[in-house]
Image (tube, rainbow, N blue to C red; front, side, top):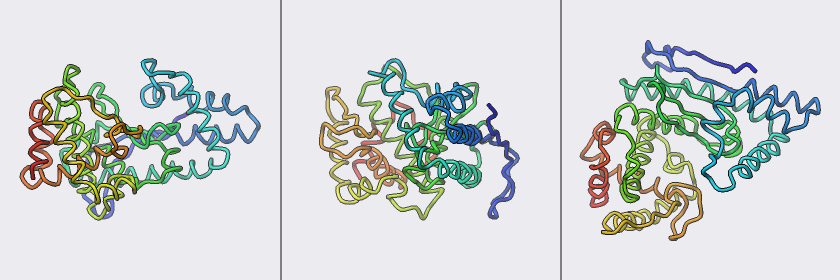
Length: 312
């Protein structure tokens, strides 16, 4: 099955300077169109999904979509995601296909705007994959392989839950840029507290990067969640106090997974509350440091930096 691979040189766009580097956009729009045509010819949906979308793009689904065998009930959970996609496509296939084209165009714009703000961004090493995520994610990056940086955007997810594509893409490119600037390898032996501090820094930075790329974006748009933005405006200081207590604990506390996920909270915080905290902390730190300074911060300095941002 043919993937649509678009090699693009970002030339003059909305008055922006052209660059000499190519980014690669891989779109699975054709795979989704073929799936839709097969369904219209009464092909069994699971067979059509495997034949036209999953099997031809196995590597992408292995890298980005499937729950790993380390996860509880991973086979059942993967099957549930397939069924969710099939059900959604019954009524929304044309909208999803149209969204692929919309995201492809916005990817070009997002790269140009990002490059304008961060000229040393290596977009010639970047792949942007626009694919069905089976509602696993809106945007996601993977680890670096042979200096190739990859991020994926879920076209189905963004059809069901629309977000500003430039903000989302600049957020994910912020993660890629962080990988490019800071080559420190992940420390698997780091404490839960230090990993938590690193997440606050990382997600705060990428949200701040989105704000720089799209300066008129509202807090709701930047956090990609209306309810979280409202909570952040009304209770942000309370969240900062909670994080400060966690980081000042002498023991190694258990960290509520809801800080950086959509999972239900065990400690009465909203899902993804860490994104609010990270953004507020960065607003304080950026009065003293540059984004580049913070991107370069190593793991041992992260906790100290976050506590400094909390002290403002």
